[in-house]
Length: 454
Image 1 (cartoon, helix red, strand yellow):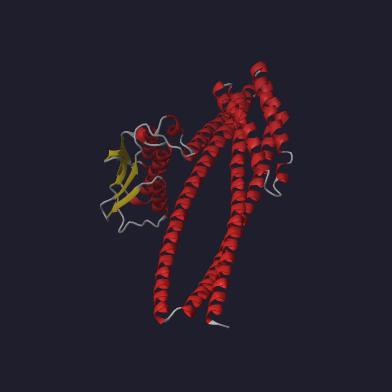
Image 2 (tube, rainbow, N blue to C red):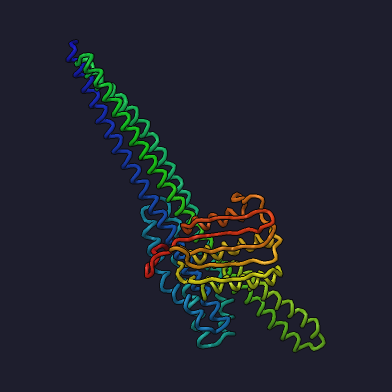
């Protein structure tokens, strides 16, 4: 076979391998896109299920609060849940329609949701027309909470299946991508070798030397491109991790809010019922007034404890009056619990976003806990305000300090994570015998700019 024939055959085979590489790449992209669409639909279904469950819980909470207290303010979450549940249910059906094997998880969910909404509407109407006593009896007879619990269990099962499916799609995508990379690398390497072989056969020594230098330059360019791509992937992964951490933190705070509401509503209802029962017992049996009075005192302590637990889970002042009022209240309670002086001076806290306010409150909460446990201090100061375009919060004590700041400890790690979640910077200054100073700086948005995060 002539030199030209050998070179032509090598070139043709090389180009054929590159064509095969293009086909493999296209098939890989199509497979990854299919998995990505399914994963996105599953994530959307997760969000829709959370919204549906939140709407149902709001309906139950508002109905229960209105029946027990008669306060029209409880009808706000009730009406909001009524307005949202149908949209959330439709969105859940739409998001799950294209996911294989998931439709079975929705069996009976529509009926249960409609049943729970109907129960709530009936009980609220009964409370408005027939009074609290009849409405309470209807609550016990209709068993709306059991229906809500069944909805929770069904939604939880659906969410577990969705998370498992998401994990499977991600694993499949990673496997396909890895296999495609190895295949593409092998094909590209073999095709390049064949093309270079054809050129080397046709060219003289000087041409071969020049082609080798060109190949080296191309390899360098490819390496730089891969380094840039890897850098971009790592940056994207870091951003996704921060987004996940923020979403997880919001979910934790949402669960805290829900638990605080449950503690406040459920235990408040039980304590109120017990006090009414004991008051009725004391009226019927005057000789039992003394022990009944002691029991009612214990119930009062239980009410105070329930309120304290609910406040620890989610301070209502933070939502109602803002960061400054919430930290003032926390500092007062810290003084009452530990006996340490706690001075607070917060300015311009209204410039912070709600998420930043929440993170700063948790940072102060964790800092005060560390002071009470470890510092052996006599006073603590909390100072906050705008400083050079950022919001700066400083928590300082006059305790024994640390030999060396330990950002790996659980308390300091929590403070650091919350600072980073808000895009801020943390500085810790501590020395033996000179106390500890926690310095947090958070970026401020320009006046009038609002957050678009949900």
